[in-house]
Amino acid sequence: MSCDTDGLPFPEFASVLPAADRGNLSRLSPSEVRSWTVARADEYCKFALALLAIHNTAVSIHRPPNELLSHIFAHSWHGRKSLRLTHVCRRWRQALLATPEFWADAVGGEEFCMDGKSCTPLEYLHSILQRSARLPIQPSFAHFTPALSRTLEPHLWRISTLAVRTRTPYEVAEIHGMLRKGMPVLAKLIVRHELQEGHYVREDRHAPPEMGPLPSHALPCLSHAELPSLLFFHISVPSLRRVRLGRGRYHDHDNSVISMPVAGVLAALARCPGLVRLELSSAITSFPIQPREADRAVALPALEFFQIEDSSSGVSALMPHIVFPPSTRVHIGGTDMDNLRPALMYVVTADIDHVAITVGHGPTLMQCRSGTEERLRVKSHPTSAGIQGLADALRSKASITELEWIRTQEYAGETLYLPLILCTLQNITSLTVSGFDADGVLDVLKTSDDSPPVCPHLGRLILGFLSSYTLSWYFLDAEGLPQEAVPEATTSVSSRCARIQPMLEARASRIGSRLTYLELYEFSKPQRGFTSLRLVTIEKTSPFWTSVEPSLQALRSLVDGPVMFGGFKTEINPPDP
Image 1 (cartoon, one colour):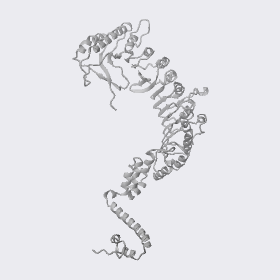
Image 2 (tube, one colour):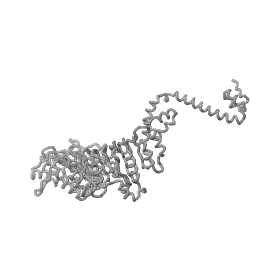
Image 3 (cartoon, rainbow, N blue to C red):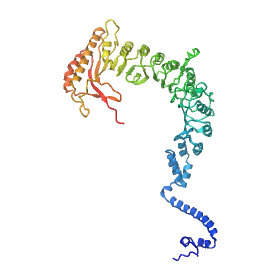
Image 4 (cartoon, rainbow, N blue to C red):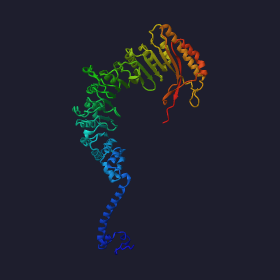
């Protein structure tokens, strides 16, 4: 095929042009060639892009209808990297921009920082808010500014969940001002005040921004709130069901925002009679309640769970003024027991029949149950005065028939704690004692002639003896399976039985009381880093049982029921991370 270049001075390029273009070029001057070729090249680029678009449209992945694409995109938000979907092709971009579910997930899919070097541009936030159309949204922010409030204002009617981390009282006041405008579908509000070092303004401690009560119709659907106490005082509404009041980091500063006097907390709670769950963490100031309000009581008839972690004075100042249903589960923590007596006297009103107290490396844990349901949990640091207060609180609880006492850490003065509790709970029928007090409780239960009987109705006794470090658990083989017990184990169990026998004889002769069930076991002292104890039993055919059986048989003659040795409990290493 001939290649006519029409005498053009660039035959190697002209040969690929259509004849019409070569004819046009042959009639142009050099300067005109430049402008003509630029315009013609632009036309050919558009033509090539159109051909490529037609080619891409014929690919199977581009054949689904827009409705299906939109349905897929509605579940495609996985962080801002998902925005790359808009660059795949024109059709995908158009479908994605028209999928409000994608953009609603973008609004709720990250925490937007509104201050500092990593500040989110308001233009980006405004764009995704607009594209989310009329769908409910759940935004989350670090810091709250007036500019952010103005950006959110057109969308307040569709915010269902709002979470904000603040660092100044003025941010809290800005949130309050936005809430006053009304948020008709807001169901969950989380405001965590986390004042950071270097941002504290001293005058804020004494002069927080003024805030007033919200209009009655401002938050009609709010059911869950996690707030600083001061903000809760101004927005407490009858629709609330779950409330958590507490401090964030560096909470020793800025108490004017985080905590409130007892009277203020009670006034706010009185406006929320339908509360189901209430949690307070360092939410109360140390100011005493005024005499004119000393008799004030707030009834919360629907309350299922109440938790407070505060100073003992704060706990004792608040709890006597709340009327709890008998079925409420109460957790008290983060304090010492010295001044808890008023709270314990008031709260131990449920039908409690089981008390469990654990003294270990950390705070002492006391659990009170009714049947299998926990009613009260106290986690605190025990003192003699605190234990005396606990004993006074439990003294009138004739319904308590079961006591568990576990002490795996030795502290000075604690040897008197268990006798004090046992002398208080005279209706005990079941007693479990493990750890350092298993030996000592035998002397308490022995009951001397010149003192009132201790636990005269006791029928079930379980004793877990804490073995010394010299007793090694070498009866486990290399795979951790039980084999023959070492002589030290046999001697230890026999000596335990010899210690128990005089107690049983004394109770039978002095108060005519005999047990109906007796169990003893040995365990090694749990150390930090160990998560649990493993029960190791020895085969009944083992010589170990032949050696200890006479000792157990001597106890059976003094018990109207089973006498059991429960085995050995040894530490289990925590699983590898």
